[in-house]
Amino acid sequence: MCQKALPPYATTAQKEKHIDAADELILIISSNIKARLTDTEQNDGYLLLTKLKEINSPATDQVFYTSCQELLTLRAAGTDLETFLARIKTLNEKIDGTGIELDAERRTLLVLIFGLGSSFETLVQIWAITPDLTADMAIRQLRAEQHRLEHKEPRDDTGFLAIRKRRGGFQGGMSPGRDI
Image 1 (cartoon, rainbow, N blue to C red):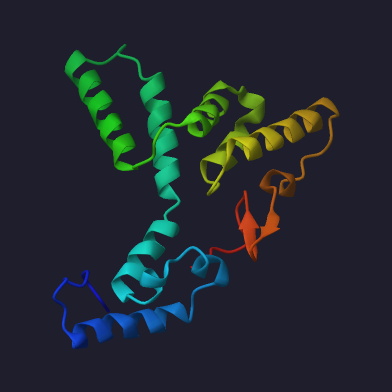
Image 2 (image 1 turned 90 degrees about the vertical axis):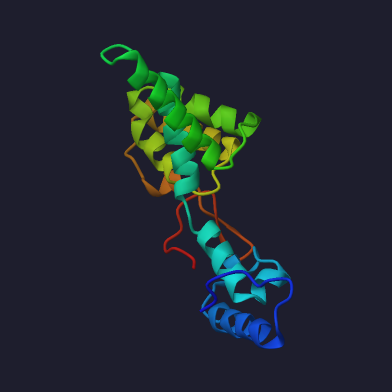
């Protein structure tokens, strides 16, 4: 398998090795994932594998949200000042390492995650692991859960998922199986 990117001066043999690796991998990739790949990524084994790792890493959003939550709720009480300041630095580095910018969409999600009471704890936990969650999707799910609570309806966990077909895949929730 291709362990590193092609250098600009790559030989024909090196280029063919990357193309062959991509050809092998592309056969087992779902159409939903293929739609998210560029032509260059589909024809270079190293770039393809790098992109697949990026796509299938739900940890990025989770690290961002959990680190933001910890940072914004961090208290100095019970710890010495240097430990407190070191924790702030570590959390900021983890947040920066995700490469996620704190735009209006993310700010809304953070307020929802931090601001909801314990009656919405299950919903917040689901959001923490839901790939591609948007503020609109979270608000729709929150309103549905509020309605369910107000009317004392039994919980239908599939209602949290808000799965909708889009481009041959699932949107807005956890899919029945991970795409690779």
